[in-house]
Amino acid sequence: MPKEKRGGSSIVQRGKSIAKEKEKARDIRRTFKILREVWLDIGIEKVNMHEGITIKALLNSSATGMFMDRRMTERYGFKMRKLKRLLKVKNMDRTENSRENITHQVEFNVFYKNHVERIRMDVCNLGKTEIILGIP
Image (tube, rainbow, N blue to C red; front, side):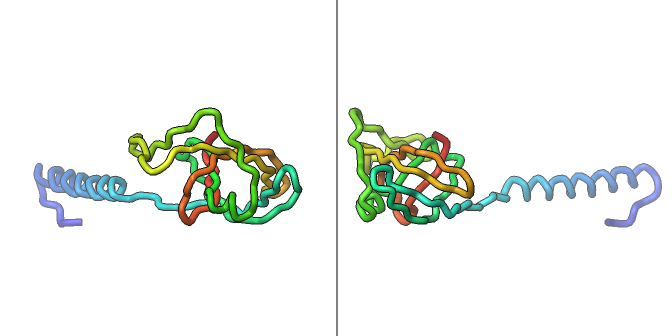
């Protein structure tokens, strides 16, 4: 902290240093982004055959649904159910995704710790991610 001057200017000097500290903190908050991914080890089981596997699922609270990768569905032989109407996929910026619409769903049991739940997920291309758990 700079030396304070005697008289009226000492208050001004102290006020400038406090304002600079606040400005630095505001800059940090503005530029700081939390880039944390939460992955869960979950068990999934086919409803009709009771065959199960353990996989890593991405927990994503900004996703507006639950999604399974199409390649994973085919690789493990999950039974896909065709939707009566296709669902349009929207990107994060709310523009339509021109590459794909959702045409199928898959239903299975999910096991996490002591919890079991039957879940229906939309099937689409997710790239390297196999399952996204969002807010349905």
